[in-house]
Length: 209
Image (cartoon, rainbow, N blue to C red; front, side):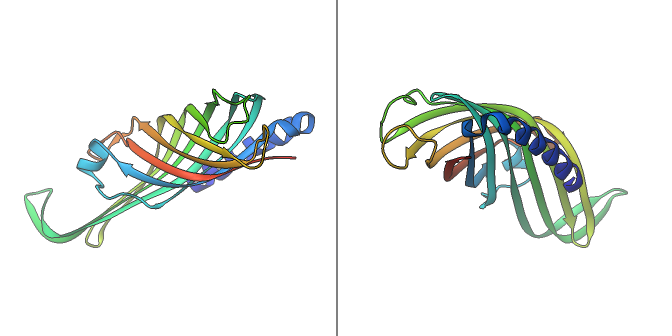
């Protein structure tokens, strides 16, 4: 999974570098720390704990002060260990073991962001965003010493909202961004139906010049 991720990000980076040669001042980068809360089947059937091990990044093109479109990616790790219990195996066998579940998710999304007050000098600028793409998923489960990992991909969609606090006076790309997202993924493997989660993030935005 990591190899595919590196190849995809390299191709996308080359595309952005090519575009930036003619319109570099229009590009901006966002870097954020992300906390993720599993919901639905993800929480009930696999991992119930909040993940504090995540981050997101995005390079986007600003069409005008109100709208930008870009490529977003990141990484989120989920992990939970359950106390020793009795588990039934194939062949009517029973084993007493500790169950460990883990999940690594790398989203690759095209995401648009709309700032309704983008042309103003407001000290707080709300925004809404939406995106779609794929999740690169690394599923892991161990029953004691037995188990393993499995890599796959799944469709992903995202809706978000938050605020941007610009640095300085007047319209600027630079600022602090605080927001939340609802993330949908149609993953349906290993007795887990969907990997939906709510993300809470905070980070910085800066123009690329």
